[in-house]
Length: 223
Image (tube, rainbow, N blue to C red; front, side, top):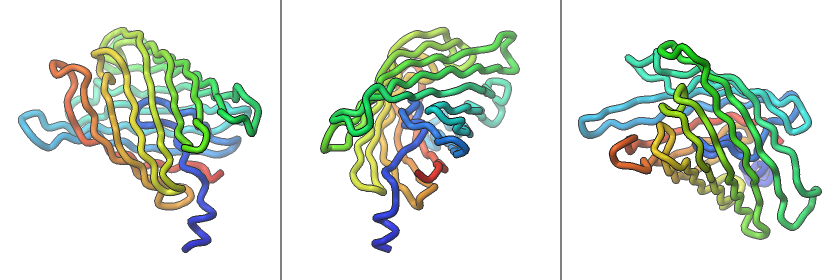
């Protein structure tokens, strides 16, 4: 067991909760992620799922397909999407503070919308020395197909590596749209390929959004 623990790579995943991370799949590698947002209390019970898959093409470039917001009785409001993420290094390997530029684009459609939607983001990600803390932040812009309204704002995330198996993390979108939440939580890596995440989403505004448990099951390429 000790040998297995030493062989596990540092935790890495393609999203924090909703905010993209700086990680991309290596050439020929692939990831899968299932997310369930569940609220089983009070008068507003919800069970919303999102599923994503991505394939690395090399040169820090990945293509992705995601089906957002699949909910019973509201399938017309879900958003199948396709796009890419690019995460080139801004500093040489071995730099005291490694930096990456992270950019991506996704195009969506919904059965109840006559137009295609879009989501664009551009960020910088830094890994702090000694603590292994990863901080990511930047700007985002999207249409009503995914966000419920046309929006431009900021997004941010933090990943605190406690060990090769455990990590604390949180992410946040500004604004009052359908993704405008703070989501803190914890990640546990069960094997070289699989990890589970558990968090709680807190809406920016009480008049919009809803508090709920966020569960994720993620398959990542082995580094």
